[in-house]
Image (cartoon, rainbow over the protein chains, first blue to last red):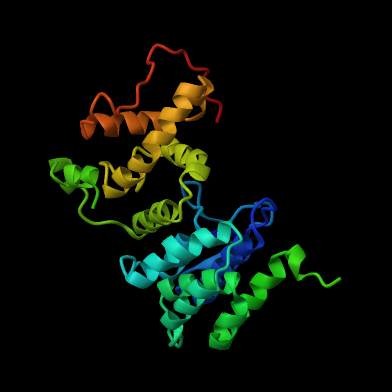
Length: 160
Length: 127
């Protein structure tokens, strides 16, 4: 199956949201089922997956789930925490250390991660990377490196 | 479970869609994610665009619980938009059509209903 994918290049939202979106897209490429062939659409500035003219996804959580064909665990406490607590924090700068510390407890075994775990991981990494870094496997680290390359640094990360 | 979802599930139309394809499951995950992360308002245009080409949010022939959940969040936003500017009718015409169908199906009370002016002449939509 051939899919057109685009990364998040929107300049008007937070660095954390851009990084989480780009990490989910990079993870979708790394963990996709074997039948997928991805082509990157450089002209699109918002995250999107398109198949033909009629099927589009604009939400990066569902893009990752679709690529992995993993729709399990959406009612779990962990995934609800990722959506209702972590995700809103990507839109505004709040102190997220407590939430990310809790999220890290859901990520203890990432040897064969589920889509829910990868979504929790992407949201948490974008909010407080230092808490999540020690948990990364080689395959996830590759996606993180790719996402960081595609995400402009935030002004707070520049050293004066 | 909200009152509207319970009401929907008591209707025979809620049983019409039994199993979802992979694409429909992805759409279900998408609208749930947008809803629960509080991003419905910023995605109104995307929802309207989706409903331009699809009768319902999971691209099904009949409404599903996803339609009802998103409808519940969208209704107050549409009320505000429609009362503030007539341009909203043209901009969100597909969303308004969908919302009007659902509010009739779910028998929303007159006091809570989205009141639409069906006599307005809208400019032709250029795709």
